Length: 469
Image 1: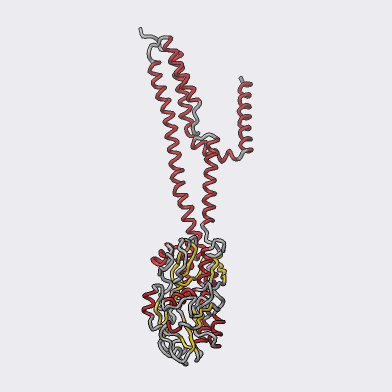
Image 2: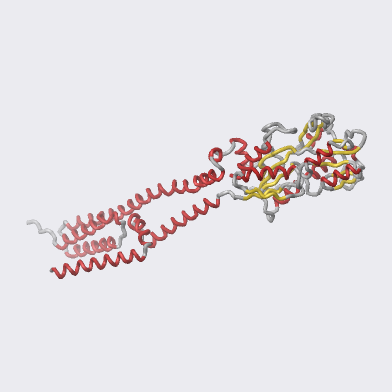
């Protein structure tokens, strides 16, 4: 008897050491143990569940970084020294303080900016575009973040008498801006309302701003049209101070704004540019569209808020032609204002970006968007699934307990040999089915209890009750 006991102990130790060695060799088994013991899954099912959970977490991590706003933006602006270029430089300084690098791409003006935004081969995110570009495509790829400023059209001309109507420039030599500029587009629209079109008796030239100013001062052209997208502000001021050059006064400004809905009537008060020299010498009415900040539709929402905050800082103050707080504004012309911009105009920056630095707010926002919903789904699921699986296991156990109870009722009866063989066969089927069951370790006591009860019924079959006298 001691030899048998020692042999059993050695065998048990050998089995335990073998299992422990197997666990050490495959540390993956430790990871799978909760799936097998708690959920009652097979090794293959536990492995699939574990891999699925890992893939879900990896996807969440990927999506967390995928939602991060880029550190670099590219803007298409204007010619060096132009209003567009100066705006872009101010944006660059403010964005850099928030950890975003702004790369400025010079251009000929609004039309080229728009062309770049529509061209998928050009790496650009945002751009300044003058309103009223009639040939703007309507593909829905571009959205507006709002209007940021007025873009006055200044017409300078030579002559001893004032020009009252634009039609008086017919048969003259006019410079209407280079191809690709917004200046050219709005000037052609103004001239066409007065019967002046390309190819007619009026000579329309496409010189750059500097060459146009020189030609006007030299007397080789009669008038030049300038706007901020392609002309530097110092050059315009130089022309305003030249006693031989006059600034055209739009006496019909109200009519132009009604005919061309994207134009605005602006007033340049007497002496407002230079009080000492009284420039201009009289109140001057001018017209001009607004400048829109356009972006590709896929611009990151967080950068939309940051850009509009930057625009508010750059354009929000009062100036000669605008009131404080007038810009930026959700004025919609050729392009729809983006939903993110409309939300900003309605309620300002979102809560996190209002109280936290930009990149910290971005990280917290992405955590809320990615990981919080993941935990909201997984935590209840991890609580519910064990209960569901336990309920399923209980149903299986109860099923065989029910079959065993029905069988035991027959055992209590005085069975014939044929009936007893039938009952034994049914009991063998129940035992075989129970032995094939896979249950979690937490149900081991009930499982072994069921097997013990099966053995109890088998013993009763083997030892039928004595027949009553």
